[in-house]
Image 1 (cartoon, rainbow, N blue to C red):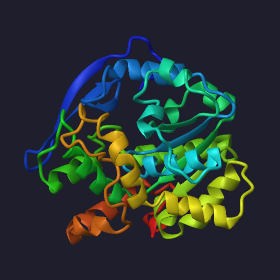
Image 2 (image 1 turned 180 degrees about the vertical axis):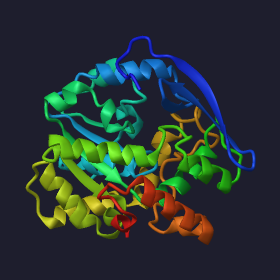
Image 3 (image 1 turned 45 degrees about the vertical axis):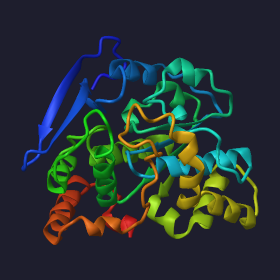
Image 4 (image 1 turned 90 degrees about the horizontal axis):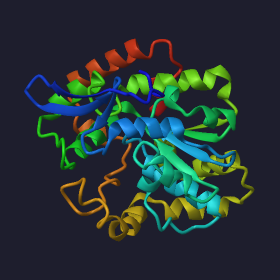
Length: 304
């Protein structure tokens, strides 16, 4: 993948599941975008051209891992408030928003991305920007991504869960392989960046939001009592966020999704994936996980 080339090549690719369900992506030099993303070649160039600021915080995750949720939390922490943002996370997503629009945002900026670590703009590393990495059980990610793909207008997935799981395990979805994404960030952290990256496990945040939010606050340099973090946890409860974002988002996402309601907060449960995976599918997933992540410190037990 050559992410800094001004002559990036674009190819439309369609992948088929075993029962005929298909996913079409826009392939820019090996990196896959959803069809709904406008001008994916320019998106690659904009990522490389991002002018980072020393007080930027960049939240990184594979899709459907809690990026909207954590962005709301971090935005609230950085404003030292307990009210959800009056903006949508999409406006901070560097893989979606043109570089000029990102550049026009006032400091301090809380930016977001789904890119793997090797795509990070050089000056993010140069300025030592703080990075928050979200990791979620990839089985839960697969289910949430499957439901997400069923909602989009262009490139909507109408195949079976079996089809989608087959494609997900092969990285034949937008943003490529979950396994490669996780390993890219682990490598980045191990090569001199451990002090600038804070890892949030989605499952831990769901189980113990107050303490996990307090850890984020400490990483961001805040000095607050636990009552404040409890207030942030309450304000960013998924049901509260659903309510606060519905009206804000309903007019801005109609071009991309079948339904007008804001589609980015579904159930948010840790074990909902069990309602989709058969026993044999889970065995297959565990086997592939062990092979893909055999040299990684991230194990499925990390998400228990």
